[in-house]
Image 1 (spheres, one colour):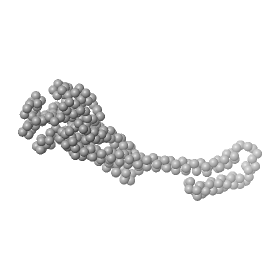
Image 2 (cartoon, one colour):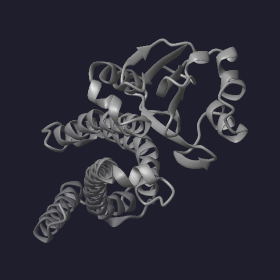
Image 3 (cartoon, helix red, strand yellow):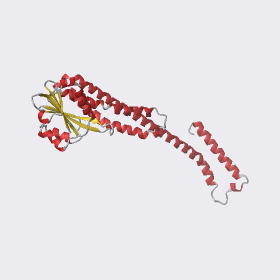
Image 4 (cartoon, one colour):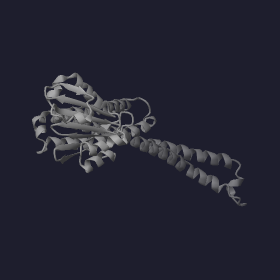
Amino acid sequence: MIRTIAVTKNRQLIEGLPLEELKTSQIDWYWVDFESPTEEEKKLLESYFHFHPLAIEDCLQFLQRPKLDYYDGYNFFVLHSLNQDTLLAEEVDLFVSSQFIVSFQLFQSSEIELVRQELISDPLSLEKGPFHIMYRIIDKIVDYYFPTIYKIEDRINEIDNSIRPIHMLMDEVFDLRSQLLTIRHTIFPMRDLLYRIINSERLEIVKEQHIYFTDIYDHLLKLTEMIESNREVTSDIRDSYLSLSSNRMNTIMMTLTVITTIFMPLTFIAGVYGMNFKYMPELNWHYGYFITLGFMGIIALSMYFWFKHKGWF
């Protein structure tokens, strides 16, 4: 689907104008949005707009890393939005010049739609041109990162303060770490892209709106700090679990070792008197059985109290 918004020189907004009428002298600038385009619509990137083949290839070969490319007469941006359900990146491509902005996405983008509705309802935006629309699209994409991060952070805090046994929560902790890593792969490249945009010497219009793009960059810095902080918390929870598991295992092994040690002399005595030799003088004692059992009991109790005194039991 292709949707168009055109702004005339007298600052009138026209929706749904055919592509053939966008380049007339009455049009100051325009926005063409490709949303889930058909194969025929994809060909318009080359046949009508005459964009560079490499930029078109980047649009059609999902998924490119967020980047900025300079071409004659326009700039090409690859952005990553975040799918709230799968947490995977979805690519949004922008072709931007002082006369037009062309957005291209192979899916339905809620951020693009929101900016579009805001543009229609806010006549003041018509004065600022395509680069301001680009700023608002990037700003919406970054703003939509926050709810997911906040949701994960709240769940991590709940786990950290939970009274449930930690081993019952470890599967969820590892799932949250995996989600943070997936989001990290989306946000960090976007942060690098914004750094390049605000420090670019070739984007003159960005210099005029530098404070706006710096604000987005600050948001991305905050997001990266939140991701790293939450990953550290999950690491602490994991390390605590491993430490508790190791300590529990050591306690179990110590208990088993002490029990085995106590039974070693008892087993030795039982083994000696369990041998089937005929001439063993103790076998003929009238009270030999009771004496041996008593001696074995004294050994066991002595070792038990000695180990307990040492704190091993």
